[in-house]
Length: 292
Image 1: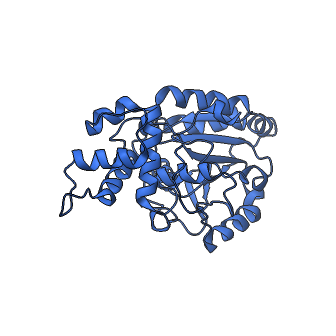
Image 2 (image 1 turned 120 degrees about the horizontal axis):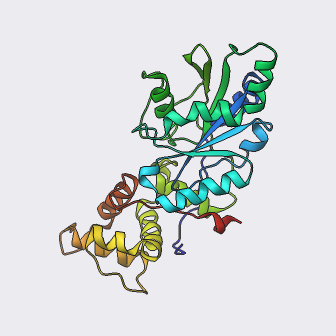
């Protein structure tokens, strides 16, 4: 990504420290973990501490928001996670796409050994208890509401809405333990922080919006130039910097200030909003081999 000056991103509100304690205190109550990640940035949207916090419990990873991500790259990520020993599914929690596969996958694959053991011991009616985890704004509440068939969890398109744990009973055989979204104390890799900022997982209030939009435009110009050109009707030159691309977008959209100056702040907000809503196209911010 373009090396545009930007303050180091760190964001760890107090309620997130509480979440870590909640997970540790409740992990023994559940049979498996359902971890939701953003399919546009599947590794960057995984808390690196989650493996240690969940103490080796069987895991299902849900790549959410697939309608916003590059379809071919999403399939590569599913194969990647499966190669690491975790089951993975592609879903969209808002539309409901792929959600019918979750519970059968949990019972028949993720918890296959436990289910066979229970059947052998005559305990087939025992409820399966699942802990739902993920970083803020990744779709946990939408998932729970879809599975439960009612608005049990509060849903807002901003990070950090769920603040306390809550049990949700799906049926006589399945219970979900919803945990608040948890980020981590320090981003060792700032490119991870920037990807999370692109997707809205980190509050825009602590970021320089124009710098963030410049970084996103630089990435798109290299990796999704046709989508960028189609959306904003701009010509992209090989040496265009982030600020040049942002000014081109602002000028093309008629975002002008008095005196002929381009309103780059307004252009930046537009670019970020249109990326997050999928209007620029189906875009993934990282691919598996980058992390190998």
